[in-house]
Image 1 (tube, one colour):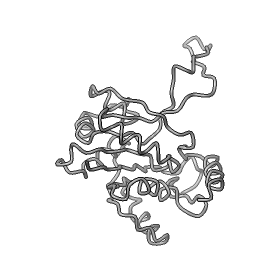
Image 2 (spheres, rainbow, N blue to C red):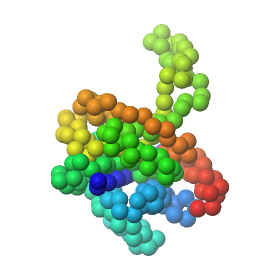
Image 3 (cartoon, helix red, strand yellow):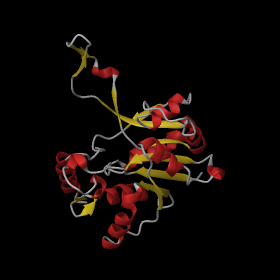
Image 4 (cartoon, helix red, strand yellow):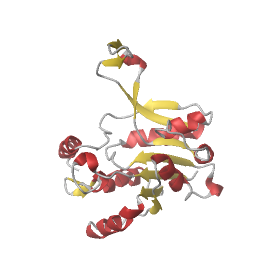
Length: 228
């Protein structure tokens, strides 16, 4: 069964307070995005990787690849106006003949996804067709009410969603043929709107999404701890 990974990296770097998009920032001497792609190649050297970047960042990415001698095989797709459109562009590069294969969609700024999480997502997607890694909520949640007050929610009723969200190729292609809806915040919401239930599996807490300068500090600490 053919396996793909669509890695989406559309960040502009605004929350980092600089001009360099977050996916290109170095952590311990290596760009975030390269570390993310390395994680998938370690899982399976035969995995087909499709990287989705804004068109204006493609040349800069190729320059980074030369600078860091990054030769991991991958295809490039141009990003769209929203994440929905960017994922659709990445999926378009998967041949229709591989509809029975599996595809994981992953945030380019999540370089610490565990190998067993990746493996579980692909394995469960073989039969469940739509799989999403999640972690437990460990802090107290409060819901804001229309009155201006708030109330405590039972945190055991909620989960934090991560990537890679993994699907049967044909299912995800068909789901992304739907018209865009602003409520499509991730791939799971797209396939649910298409009528497909989603299976939850255990993620890993280290699988943080790097979006702020604080996250960079956390990432460097994680790398120092693993000596990677």
